View 1 (tube, rainbow, N blue to C red):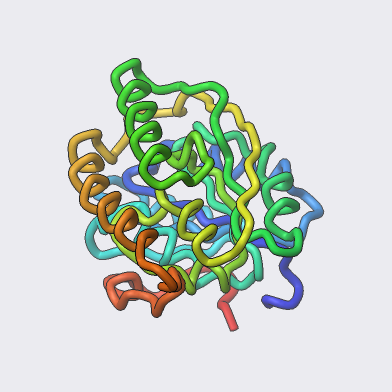
View 2 (cartoon, helix red, strand yellow):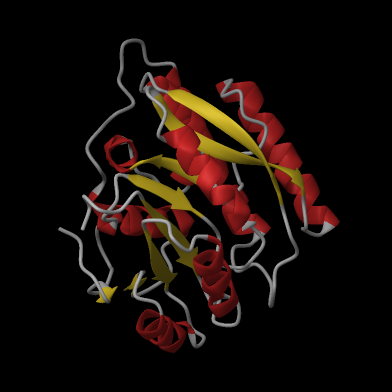
Length: 256
């Protein structure tokens, strides 16, 4: 399977039952003829997401899925999907419809270039409420000043990376927000792509400002300390927590 696929699309999803059918339909229509798979990780949803995923996997042969028994956060969901991915390149997109899948192929192409560890989308438009936009800009400003990661927007859900690179990085609760500096510290290049944000299709964000900020402050301090360690490699063994608490992978195909 891994020898025939160009990339795996990993979609972390928490209570996105209303949005996932449209997201999957748009992706499969846009990428018709491409060699890819979709892997959706249900991050402890309490709505109808499990049933929707069963229906989607029957309707789309390229789709597989797994579930966390409880919500573990976006980084854990991306880790679960990346570990299960069959392709050498993984590209992530949110399950709420805000990320435009027309950017996927461009990100994959950037990530495939020699010496590149990460291709990161940077939003030029934001479809969030004013309070969330302000919080995001402030968090990005603080992170950029402290870490010097040369990235203006690390919260964008559109990212692409080589599977082996991601799995070699240290795992922690909000690592997806620090991928640029982690990849740079590992000696690989980061490439950026301007992308456009859209209003979410249904519902509201399931990851709030307060809980993300609380975790982010601790992890920001941790990453800052890691980047200051002389001679210390940022590449480490994957944390066991990233592997735990997921059900058997379901869908029409299984990884090698």
